[in-house]
Image (cartoon, rainbow, N blue to C red; front, side):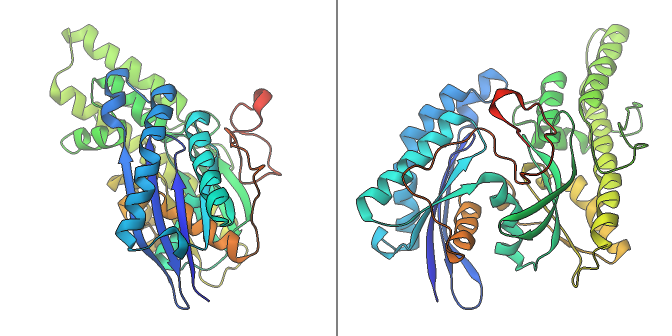
Length: 362
């Protein structure tokens, strides 16, 4: 049976639409359109939710049209509409959900709500046909967790960040150093010519048992290190920026490398037939972190899967594929589908990031 799914993604600052088709052998991305908003938020040092929501409203319908035209299809050729229903910035999530509902109301097509994190978690199945169960390191601007993925709707969290996500720490570090946003690419570029050993930065929780991580203290240490340099010489040189960036990136890589080994110990105890560590999310695009994980897996005899860089950051192809797996399993939603700012994949795990009145973020 062949299934063709239209995916819609608008959880943060990327407006995206994609078409994915599952034939007898493997899934195929027929179209993937992403409109970023970097220029709109550049003057604010981060994503402004209200600006992001308005941009989604302006771009979503044309994005869907582009995706269908690129795929050479019409809505009549689509079997179901998959849309990110959370977690994310609520204004953007609402925009996508309302558009998807409108399309479904007009065409009678089934509606499939998708957890944005599940989109990232299932990307290795889209790109590399990874078999269940596999270990997923989801590492992005808003999330960081190790997940045992046993099925498209079956996740067990092994560990994660107890405070800042690494992507958030990269963005804040870029601001601390006077680099551009988004912070991940800017810090990586600056680190290329830096000395990672010049500044002694902490590796929080490395001596603690378990796979939990912490990046807030590392960010604070960066502020103190920068302040000490400025106090000594009256400002930051480009060399100082590069060395600080390299030191920060090395610390993050050390933390992720060590905690990945801990998470793998628990995963390998299950004796999976084809042991695999997969990584996804925007920070997975960092070449230094990828290299560390690649070397670690090679030494342990574990397959390492990292999707293409374009599928690590937010995109709708991953939403279309996650929706495809849900739809193939008979899981569809109706017009009561609501947008959710928080939506943990492992519903049974205790909250790691402040829950408050709106429930657990992760």
